[in-house]
Length: 141
Image (tube, rainbow, N blue to C red):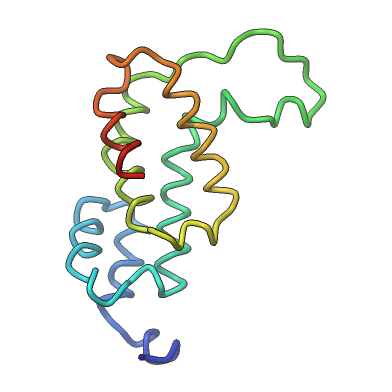
């Protein structure tokens, strides 16, 4: 196995990190698929960037259901608003594939995993038409 120092010189892994950082998700997902044989998520910079980007894509879905208002002392009596279709579509197109790419390494980011569970619970309570294909993602996760 390659050492961490050798991976720092790996142009393919560093290109993947750069694509993710630039939010070029289509080519980044292609590179992730091409490199799947070498387990690119095991490289910490790739894992960290995948988690950061998945978390950023999830944030608009998570913010209305988060516990932040309770921690701030703000009273919350109203039900959180339903996510809009654009937010759900962006997360379905890129967020879910990035999370799936993490595989078992996802347990290394407990905060992202917790947010994912809360978002999934929220999305599963909506009408099926609001989140097309959600059942497929649930099965894959």
